[in-house]
Image 1: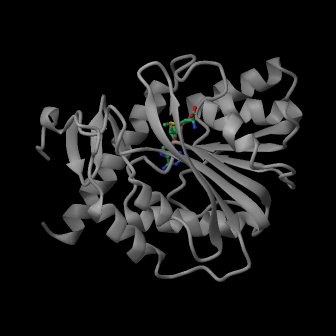
Image 2: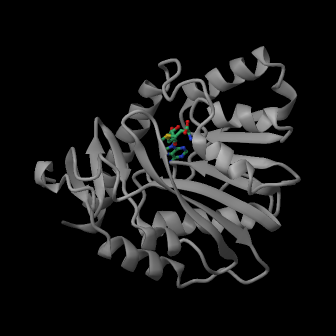
Length: 257
Ligand SMILES: C[S@@+](CC[C@H](N)C(=O)[O-])C[C@H]1O[C@@H](n2cnc3c(N)ncnc32)[C@H](O)[C@@H]1O
């Protein structure tokens, strides 16, 4: 298939993913009203995150509201408008309007913030969207840029042990279409490959969330003074290529596509 055709297909697939999220997040309480277990974990790693926290892929803002309740100034970013509208209404209801700003933006574009703007960047289940190694590398480089020196990047991704890894339509590598959402399941090596070049791995744990639990790797990377490492994409590419689903559900997968 020609490069132009590939680009057109990628762009179409991404527009469909965007529409799927806009539709899903128009439903109230899509992930429930309570803050996630990851949020409690992250709060322990962000002691005095100043000058504020940037949440990427904030959804309907269950965690942004919790972070604001803990006194943080939160910038909540997502590309789906209905989730951000819900968050703005809830922030008003809870008297947190002064501490929560919403920004509609696609994280595959450069982040619209100055260098060193945030003491922490937070992303719960965002890196496991329909992103390839080049997208993840570009996003990590942007996260590093907008973090203040010594700031932390706290993120979670679904693991290759997750019950849904291997279910649904196989897209490529460890990415599956689960109910219309493209999810990439991460091995530990894929998470480790996100560190380096000015983002040092400080913690890597494991959590579960929900009734039919989503299995999560949770990590904390700290911004150091080291230069951005241009070999990061190569590292991620290798880790992505080697990963496989370990959930034991491979027999049920449809490998078309
Ligand atoms: C799995 S949901 C997690 C939502 C939220 N972090 C939570 O746990 O409640 C992923 C979120 O990322 C957002 N998202 C996916 N791709 C994005 C992109 N390219 N740019 C910005 N947001 C994106 C979706 O709209 C959705 O809100």
